[in-house]
Image (tube, rainbow, N blue to C red; front, side, top):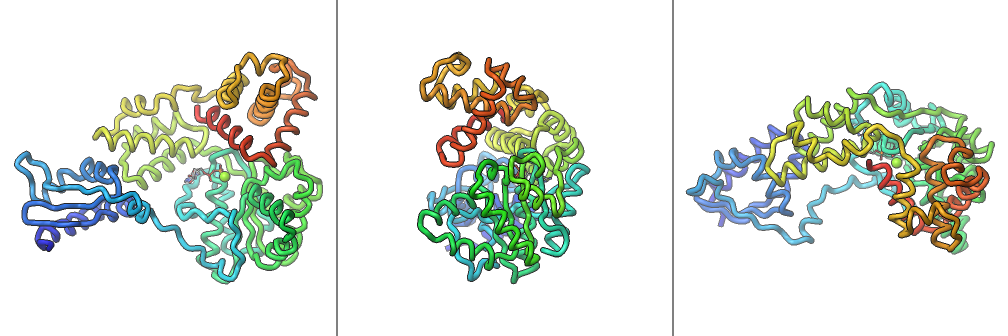
Length: 449
Ligand code: ADP
Ligand code: MG
């Protein structure tokens, strides 16, 4: 039986902690803790994993001592039990249920809207203000302002975040509207599947009659997919003609996508909005926001230091916060610039400002495809080597802003060989999941610097 005084003391401690931390940190770290047993001189707590235990002891040891019984050594008299793996899965934050999908045929490949990707968690600054207000305008009056809204910008700058924010907002404010959020890749896969199972009509009907708001992520994947391009274009036209809202994201503006003129014109019909790399002040604000979400208190000078050094994309900034918070939690350290420099060494010192180079690409491809850099640069035509060579050319073309001639020269090839390689790889990627993943791995390795 629980002895109520210690138990009450725990409740008081929770109230105390809640008032001093962000709601997210509280929800993630403290709320999942369960009191198993308590007596006048000890309390047994069940934690979902050891990190929660570390977090509690690192951040609240003194406070626990103040609220709870204390051992002879001056430690809080707390015993921890780490709950089973199944339980720890149960207490993961529950995703917001998609309300307006009632009656809509469930589509297995669709990504759910990420509940953390909301307008109120999207920090704005001069480089993304425009796109945010355009997105908010569309979310407030779907189908009545800009249609389609085309959002483009580099990797990790918040395009998906904004897209999902639109979905969340419409879901909350226009409950009757059926929102469909899909990646271009998933759309293509779905179309391929329905062609195979001869259910294309059903799919067409679904997109044209059962969807009020269509959110399409990563439109660049449609390039060189001629058959699918037409299908998507027809769907878009049907929806737009019915004043149904479409929002598209892509890594390039419509005019730079290798798509049909008809589709490009369609995309440019509404509003094309660019999301840029946030400047220092905004990066600091984003970083502090992310840190706060994790319950990590980063001093202002340290936040500036990180934001100055990690500037390529926001995902990297988040990675920095994650590493730092894990390190501090485990080592029980307070954050200083020196500590940051130490923990984020690779992030900060590996070419912080440099762009991707052919050498980086060659190394990345060699590692993932298990061939030698010299083989990629050589002339051997065995299947593996030829493929990795084409992948390297494709990635150089994608990541390095140079002419095909220049890129060709770095591989000792002509521009038409590079072009041929790019087309071949894009075509294969569309059909070959393994290759797509391998290429993603190389990309991660070259952009993580
Ligand atoms: P993209 O789709 O452009 O590659 P994402 O939308 O996936 O980028 O964003 C990458 C990460 O950075 C996400 O976790 C997102 O929440 C975060 N992010 C990007 N921009 C912002 C911002 N302005 N405010 C808060 N978080 C941001
Ligand atoms: Mg994205």
